[in-house]
Image (cartoon, rainbow, N blue to C red; front, side, top):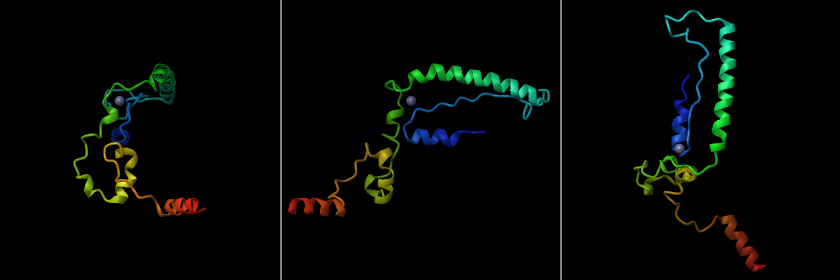
Length: 123
Ligand SMILES: [Zn+2]
């Protein structure tokens, strides 16, 4: 019933996020509403499908256009931990999300790459 986890994760990933929630009936929580029938739910569901299609028809052309919202840089000032305190494994795991703000120290290359370079140099 809630999409709070998705909204939070999208925020952390600097993704634009919106919810499209369409109601089929109110009888579960609304005491003054009459009991709902399957026919009423299905009728509302079909209306909701039409509404969802119309929303998508209007929104999809907007996807891919440059964003004019703060979403792409939301993490810039969100992390207060000293980057030097990031455990290397955690830092690596979060690189996709925070790498643009906290570049990892230059590596001397993985052992396999060093060995491959040495082999190609030595012939
Ligand atoms: Zn946005």
